[in-house]
Amino acid sequence: MDEVLQLIDEQVKSNPVIIYMKGTPQFPQCGFSSRAAEALKACGVKFVYVNVLTEPEIYANLSRYADWPTFPQIYVGGELIGGCDIVLEMYQKGELKPMLEKVAVQ
Image (cartoon, rainbow, N blue to C red; front, side, top):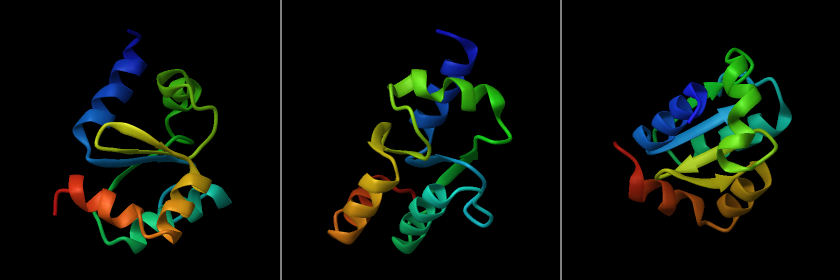
């Protein structure tokens, strides 16, 4: 496995909730990343983020890791949940918070 894919794998497996996004939750650089991060924040569960704009190797290779071509990418419990649309839909249905609470470290 490439070094960068190994790094991504370690990040995904060692963080209960992680979002790979453009920008940061406080200063998103993309509307999709902004909406996904807001949904995560609204659930009140700690999460980690990676700003792919400052990590060019991750930006270039993340789509190879989970075969998901777009950003943001949200992983919960080591599994890809999806991107902005899926996370927002789960949030609106009340499904996201219980999922995050199951894996989150408070």
